[in-house]
Image (cartoon, rainbow, N blue to C red; front, side, top):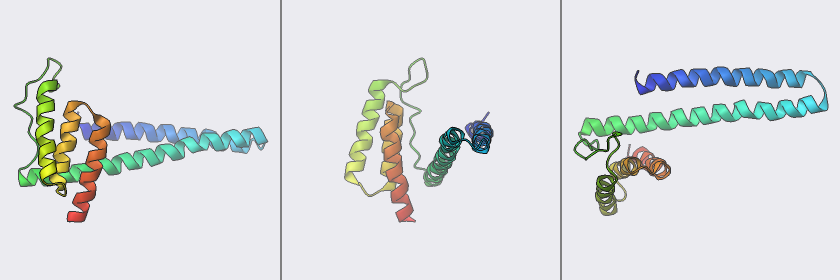
Length: 148
């Protein structure tokens, strides 16, 4: 199953859960008691927060997909197929670090190019640093939006 289909399926399941949770909040409001209303407010915050997270995640994913397609059309998508891999399939740490260093130097040479930021984010990802990969990819999205 393709990753997008899995994401859609999981999002649909989450939406069902959030609707059920909101329904519980409404039931708590309906009790009319101060404790029920207070609990209802607390429970209702969770679906609202959940919807915000889902929307933000999908929006980010679509923006990154747009960048990926643009790089693919330019023939400039990062290719790590030649890097050595562990038995688990992950890129070997030493090779990932070397590939990362090359992407960092590329970015230092051209810090306003969203393509360099995208490749650095990819390098962070294969090196296992997901937090920095996300932050760097956000910078690539910002620069690409200004580039259009």
